[in-house]
Each structure stands twice: as C-alpha cells, then as structure tokens.
Image (cartoon, rainbow, N blue to C red):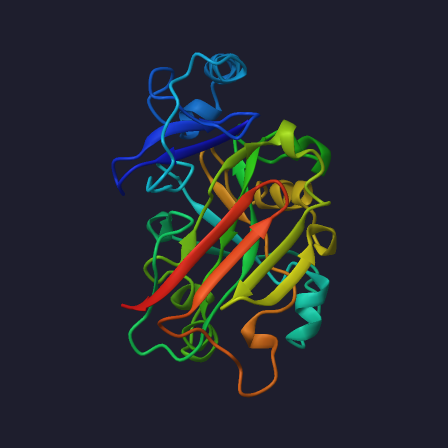
Length: 285
C-alpha cells in the first residue's frame, strides 16, 4: 500500500494511492497514519481491504498539499557514512559500526514543502536517503533477518545538512542536522510487502535540474536489517519511529572546490524507485 497524508500543515488527513494511481480519502476508515495504526494489524487490514475496492471517496489532487506520510513521529534516528561510495568521496574510512545521530521529529516536513537555508549558513547540503518506518517494537533484536519483521514500510527522506554547523562548530553532528525544515519526508509511506528487497532500490537527486546523486541502496555498508538490529541494541524502537539510513555519493561536501552548496532560490528534486518523488524550493530562513 501507498499511504499518505494530505492537507494544510498540522491538519492533514489520511489518504491512499490505489493501484491505479487514484488518490482516495481514508478519513472514514482511520483517524490518521501513525505508529498506532502501523502496530494494529486489524486496522491495517481494514485499510488494505478498503483500498482494494472502489468505495473510498476520490480526492482531487490538484493543488492539494502532501504532508509527511506519518504523524506523531517518536524519533528520527540517522545513520551516517553508510554508503561505500559516499565514504570514498569524503575521504573517510568505512565505519566498523554504524554511526548514529538524531534529528528532532519537528524537522520533518512534507515532500514538497519549502526548505529554509539557516541564517549564517554557507554550507547547506543535500542527501537523498531511504527512510525506514518502524511498525513493531524492536528491542534487542537478535538478527538482521528478524529485524526486517519490525519494519512497517519505507519512504523517501531528504537529510538536509549544514556542513559548517555539523563539522566545524564543535560538539556532535546535531547542530548541522536539526535546522528547521531539514527532513522532508514522503510523499508516501510504502508498506514493506510492496517494496520487497530494500537493498535493490535506485536513488537519484537533482539540483536545479542537474543530476547530482545517482546511487543504489545496494551500496549500503550496513543493510536495512542490520541497521534496525544494531540500533535496537542501544535504544528501543517503537511503532512510528523513523530511521534515515544514509546517502550515496554525490553530495556537495564531496565535490571539488568551490563546492556547490545550496542557496536560496535553488530547487532540489529527489526520488527512490517505487517510493515517489520530492521537490523543494529553498528560501532564506
């Protein structure tokens, strides 16, 4: 299933994109798309059954804002340096264990919402990422294979980053990762059964129409199942938590000088096979 939320920010309603690409209203079936829904097999089956028929009301997509596909996100866990090609381009050694940092849930915005360049920023960067959405509580999961059973679905994430704040201002990476609007998510939450193998997805990102990132999740150092297993050894993952699993090569940080960092007026577009496409215009904060 392709689940999404539409409407004005803070007042989104649940929707479903059916097999024919028709946008349908789910508000008569469920209150919202959140961790509680993803953990409720009976409720998900009601959604699946309703989506298989044609009784759900059709929504006019023209001019309708798409919000983040998940409400009430608990936490956004991020994995750094998780692609072999990205590690090479930045001159970093592939990590022996996953690098973990966090983004606050309030950085999450819709896939086509404006991204704000922070005040004083000179090194705002792009990162297309596969987002994993947790559907079953994961605590000390024993194997990567078992960990995949805790995944409800997947989405496109844009891990926008300010590299000076992240690397040059002391402390942890979090200062360069938690600026307002720095985690566009969506357009859809695609359930795991529809995605299949998460290690076979192509990922692309364009800046002002120029292809910058062209990679595949097959380049991940730590695959999705291992990421979920590993993270669950250090914290409990709950339904509605999100894991951003890293970015492939092609970010501005890895380019020759002068590095083409983002500025107000730039347009970033990104997509992952089967998970949809995002488009953001950048403005000054």
